[in-house]
Image 1 (cartoon, rainbow, N blue to C red):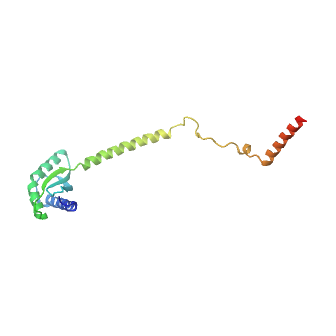
Image 2 (cartoon, helix red, strand yellow):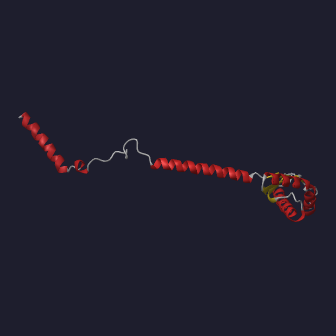
Length: 167
């Protein structure tokens, strides 16, 4: 097993080599507007997977995949020359699914925004089922504010009433 840092460096180098090869050396007319997005190498450095995207129709994508498949040997030999490793990794080209995933996520976000707007419209026109403010309010302050003198006077009156009735 190779060390992960070496595999990462190798994958970065392979990505650059493949991108340069596709730009400068591979002159296949089937090759469309291609972008190398990533390259990954296994831990033992024997297999390399190169991810790419193609801008265009499904037919152009299929033509580009065929062109990459036919140029695989030339690309692998150039990788071997430029990296100088004992065993040149086998190269596999995989169409990257990032653009399709991004479109799917954008569609989901658009649907969520539309649903949020509907909820906002319904909330703006909503009416409370009960009172507008369901919380109890404190009672009137005048009724609650009893002076200590008023309380003491009431107690005296009650005492006098009790004393007057018993005598």
